[in-house]
Length: 95
Image (cartoon, rainbow, N blue to C red):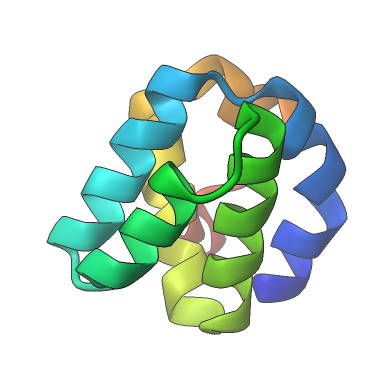
């Protein structure tokens, strides 16, 4: 799963909107995948949306497969068009 995020990283960074990125950080904070400090690092740290997206996807990817699966589920809910464009499959679809 984490490898899958690495494979779609550059396209995610280029395509995710600022609003969706903020929603995803909020979702993963609520799911306890990220903590307040990590969310602050992403949202308040880098200046461009692409840099924020890059920091975000790398942070989640490094947390492993479960965190990566959570991100994919949240992305499918928040931006189904981007989810599809990235060629992702929901972890539930793999069963």
